[in-house]
Image 1 (cartoon, rainbow, N blue to C red):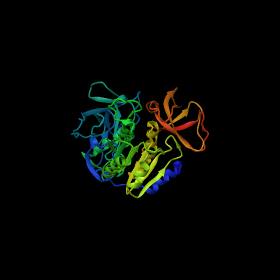
Image 2: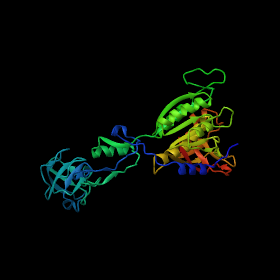
Image 3: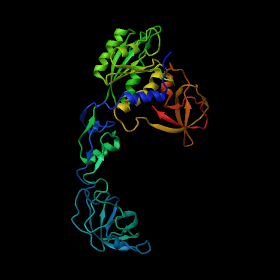
Image 4: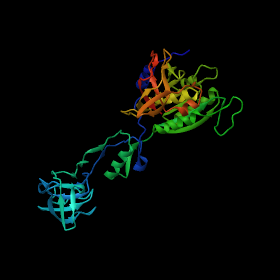
Length: 407
């Protein structure tokens, strides 16, 4: 039926035929930078912190004045002032003196440690009693301990996380240079497919795949665009795919990937330019009739029409394609280690991506198979992710540890 490729062969074809596709750069507010790929090294123009500061609420002291202090024999120091937040202390710490300092306050000159409030007693007579000795550096963060001036804090190509946004704020970056998002065009095909706002009649079905793929593309950091529903006809599909290819880096066509008389996706891809169809059929469940094509530098993917199959194939193969075209060093996938709660026999001869639900019991994560055929929509909403069952495997056993790739 097809010249079916294995999953490994398909991944190899992706690596051999696609490469980093520079989409250009744009400067955005750090409020809009979450999840984007950094397109410049971010270098600190100053030390962080810019001064020696306290990491606790307590008293700034000379450590040697506290040596030997205990609850039964505390050391007594004269309070000479109080450090104000955001202000440079106008006094210095000399022998047998101390000053109250809040967390984040600048260390007064002469002090070399901070004793936590919990280890002091103040009787209101102008002195503070220390009942635990301090060593130099206790309770302190020294200038430049966090970030040194001139150091590269965030590297080009890094995907920006929420904590990275905080670091950029600390460095004073209001805007940052990021790579433009890869553009993904989404097309649904089929005489039976209708807009989601319409009521199905007879054997008609609403366009599920466009919206599931659109949401997945957003999660992957892509810029998706809908190109609508196209009837089963060579000219109509060819015109729409050509339009999408002119505007996008990757085009996904849902439906039309099997060998039915109206399934023309293969012919359309081959008609648009070299090298054309690279893969038609993958030895995988679900999603055997998947198509992978290339026209010029653009990628064209034919997804199965069944929603669950289309969703899994998009998350497995299009995700890998995106990683290659974005030049990512890491994976977009997130996984959870869990224990299978039942035996599951797998089809021999094909690799399987089994949808599962995750749940916790007695502090342990478990995975449970979601049973259903590829055309069943409910398997999408009940699944939390999938596990990979290798080709030739007899399946997975109850109690076996598995990696769940989270949707």
